[in-house]
Image (cartoon, rainbow, N blue to C red; front, side, top):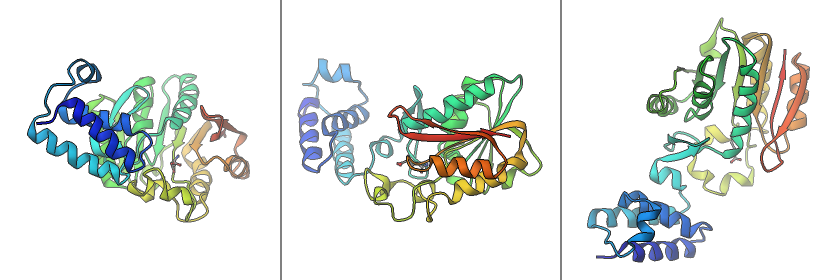
Length: 278
Ligand code: GLN
């Protein structure tokens, strides 16, 4: 039987040879996951054995990670804003840059007494759930086209005790006749054929959440054009986009009748979210 320490070294070597940059960290996180232990346990008792069923699972997960499958899909969870969300290949893995979208939406919601907000293309639900938990006075609705995504998001909302009203459908379709104070979205915005889609584990993620299979702005165009009919007077539309889509996004917002279109950078200083109000 191999010890935890031996398995860590073995895993690191296997992943490094497969070209995984975070080999040491990923081997450790997979080992903690299968052994049901934490980093302290690992450092304190590396001589502890990894029991047989866990050993088999560890070897299988290492082999999958070596092919580039993202760690979050192997452990079934990922962190966003300090909370753990369950993820499956039906949903995008949370990205830290999406925090900018949440921060901006919170800023708009906090100025209102009983605000309403809808998250279009909620995926795992990270945006809607973060808003519901951090702005308890807001009524939060979340929409996704994918039934599988909705079940992942519902499960996350239940586990985190976030009151979110989920609807299945195409963008605004399930919201007929309703109006909101804030509309947020992290839509698919990677252009068809963008070489980025073949890198960093993206081939394992749902393509419908990443690319519009067009120029990258197709979903943004639709959301911007339809949003005014679903916003209250003075309401805000905020959405995430690619590093080079800020100007096009502001132009679309202005052309749709929005005021004060602006673009905000993420923590890396890259244009990431645009928004405007009616
Ligand atoms: N930011 C993601 C990426 O480039 C894309 C997310 C999205 O399309 N909404 O990997």
